Length: 516
Image (tube, rainbow, N blue to C red; front, side, top):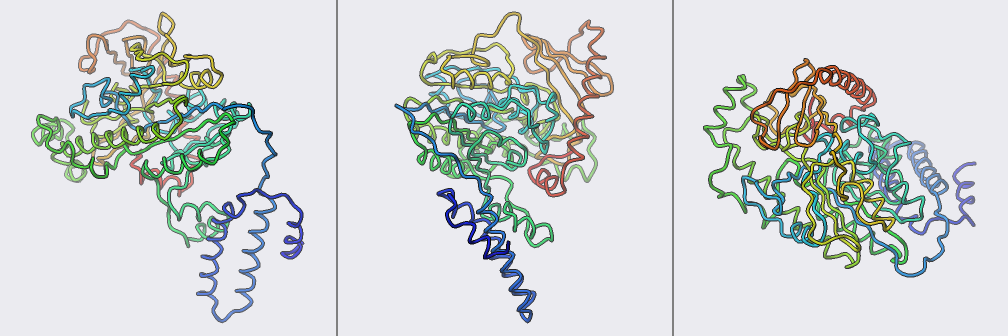
C-alpha cells in the first residue's frame, strides 16, 4: 500500500489515547538509525531516502497494529485494590519480626505490616531462583511441572497465572519488575494490561522493532539488567494514579535491591559497618579456603574478609524495608497489601558464600509472607512450614473477598510434603568458589531429605538441628530412586531451557551473577 496509503489508512481509525507514548521507542530507534544512515551514506541520497521511508513505514505499521482497548463501562462504587510486592533474595532471619540475623538489621515497615495482618514465617520456596520462584507464587504450580527450572526459561502459555484470571474477571492489572530475569520475554506478562520492565532509556529503544534490528547487527549495546527499587515504585504509583478508582485493580511490584551487587544508597550505606562479632572474618575465610582446596586462580574470586559484604547485604535489606513503607504509605487505607520474599541467601553458611540456587539449606529456600487488609486478622503469626506456592491461592481468595486461603490459611494436618530442587544454575557473588551439583529434596514437616545426583541421600531433623549441621539416618528405601527420577526430569527441563536461550539472554544472566 506504501507509506502514503498507510497514512491514509490511519484517518478515521480509533487509536489508543497514549499512542504517542507507545511510539516513542520506535521513534527514538528510527532517529538513531537515521544517524547511522547519515554517517554511513553521506553521499548517498537514495540511501537516506530509503531509510526515512522504512522508519516511517515502521511507525505507521505500529500505529495500525497497536491494539485498541475496548471501551469500558464505568464501574459503580469504589473498586478494590490488591497490591502484591515481591522482595528478591530477602532472608527470613533479616526480617525484624522473625530475627536471628548476624547483623541487627531493622525492618520497621515490614514489622508494622505484620502487626496489622498475618505473618507466615516459614514459607518454603521450591527453588532459590528468581523466575521459577515467582512463577510458583503467581501460578500456584510447581515450577518443575511447567519446565521453568531456571532463569531464562519461558512460562508456558497455559500456566494458570493469577493476573490472567483476574484480567478475565475485569480487573485492571499492572506489573512493575526490577530485573531482566522477570521481563516480558519470559511470558510472565500474560494477564497484565501494563507490564513495566523498562530498566533504562536504552532498554526502551532496544525493545522496539527498529531497536531490535539495530541490535542484531551490533549497533546497540546491551541494556541495563536491573533498576533500583525507588525507580520501580515511582513508576508503579504513577500508573496507579492514572487508573479509575472505581475499577478493581491488581498491582504487582518486584524489588531486586537485596540481590547482589550490594549497593544501598545513603543513609543506609555504611549503617551496619561497625557491627561486632560477625562471621566471615579473615581467620574463618582462611579455614574455608583450606577446606575447599581452592587453587590460586579461584582464590582471586574469594575475598579474605566477608564481613563488609554481610553488612552491605543487611543495608540493602534496611533500604528495601524503607521502600516497602514508602509504597504502603502512598496507598489507600483500604488496600489489601501482600508482601513475600522469593527466596533467601547464604551468607557464609555451609561454605556457600553469598549465593543461592545451588543448595537446599534453609537459609536459601526459607521465605516468608505478610498480608494485611480488610477482612484479615491482625497480629496473627503462622510458624508451620508451608509451600510458597500457596501465595497464588491466597491472592485469588483475597481478590474474591474470601479471606485467608492458601499460604495464609491454617495448614492441614499432617503437613503436606514440599518438593525442593536445585539445578545447575546458581547465583554466586564470589565466582571463585566451586559450583554446586544437582539435587532434589522433600520437606515433611520438620524432616528434610535431600537426594544428590550421585545417589547420596542426606536428611536433617530441623526441629533439633535448625542450622542443618548434623545429618540424621532415615529408613526410606524408595527415596533414592524417587530422587534420581526427579533429577532426570530436572536435567531434561534444564536442557530444554538452555536450548532456547539466546546469546544475549545468556550474557544478561551472567551479568547478574547467574552461573553454571
